[in-house]
Amino acid sequence: MSDEPGTPADDFPHGAGNPARGALRAAGYTRLAQLTTLTAAEVLALHGVGPKAIGVLREALAAEGLAFAGE
Image (cartoon, rainbow, N blue to C red; front, side):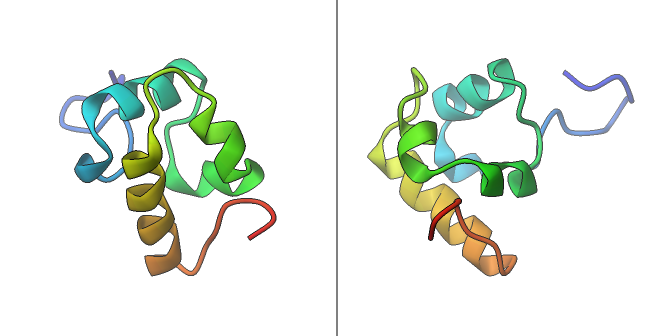
């Protein structure tokens, strides 16, 4: 959860699913742009993140002109 009332805990797309979003937050990531320092394989290795979440995150990154590391 965020410290500020009304502020979302993260800016990950809801389509990634709650388990994936929770896994990313537990690993210390709260912003989509932070994922550019990780490869898709590193994100996929997090418990709760599956191939569908990777696809959703990849699309969200691309929409912002960003990508996973190495892509």
